[in-house]
Image (cartoon, rainbow, N blue to C red; front, side):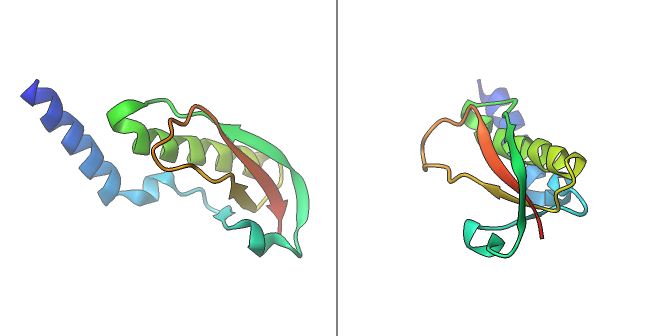
Length: 99
């Protein structure tokens, strides 16, 4: 059990230290207030690949996937729906804009 905790800690630390792996060039994440003068393109949904102790990594993976899809759809800006703290996330909907 201790070995699993060590591995999970190492994975979490690696994810925290390398946030650039979740960036998608040409797509920015903003709040809903920042897209008033932008053109709405559509919606996408990211789905986490991991849950539980690795949920933060799963959410980052879901965001990256949604950003990549936004770029494919011609968007350069994405607004994710709010995540309720402590709630399990199985889908992460977002709106795509061109700003």
